[in-house]
Image 1 (cartoon, rainbow over the protein chains, first blue to last red):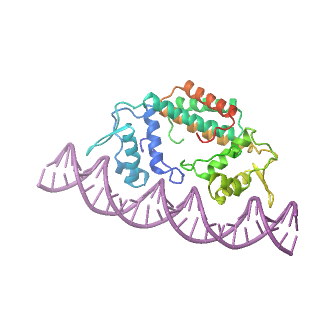
Image 2: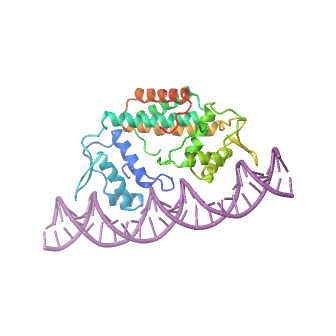
Image 3: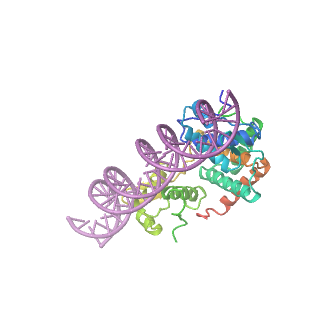
Length: 135
Length: 135
DNA sequence: TCTACTGTATCGCAACACTAATACAGTAAG
DNA sequence: CTTACTGTATTAGTGTTGCGATACAGTAGA
């Protein structure tokens, strides 16, 4: 049992990024509560059969983002306050994501209504199931 | 005037991909009509101050996708029938994009309504302004 | 035929990213 | 103090990718 964390080495997405995104979602969805301990880089690396440095890279980015906090020599923990970026940054992120998605939709010739509906559905899924992890 | 095509070398996105995406949108939005001639690889390369092979790579992918058609020795033209990928593929693309965006929105803690509204707005912009270019 | 234009194919160079291996530094418990 | 555990930093190997230069092949018009 690996605490709900999985990676897929055959995926084009880098391992460290898969770790980062998975943890982001686990925290954002409340599946991992503030203050709880993350598996150590070596433990998780052993679980996933990858190098500890790769796990460390994923953790590091999450620490930078304020999602994880590290007590040196003790371990890594979920931060007490999920950061929830400053209003400005948050809007910028969302705006950029919306543009990318809209651009894709237009490019493949999808009807705007369909594109919007698809997002609504995806959002519903995500919020309902919290996070399943990878299926 | 380069027919509404621009690229930004300082952007992380590859030049050939910028070309590909711009043309896709120009065609999808109707700004470039079926049968109309594209600038030659050399002309466009000169305009953009890049290598013809880079333009050719962008064109090649568009030809493969059925968006452009080439008459060897004459030039490259917008295909008569914008392909609009097979239903399956198209849906898959859209679905994936929606999931990515929804995931982002949830991660940064955006309200679903706001996320949806943001997409609607972006779509409106894109369809109204045809293409904005790099900006 | 000759010339000037089309796109195509191939090669090489440079830059970048991912992953892993190894050695280092801090903390806690025996 | 010693040991065993934390995370960190540095380095190296490997593969991928972007880009450009050059040579090749087909078509149109004088």
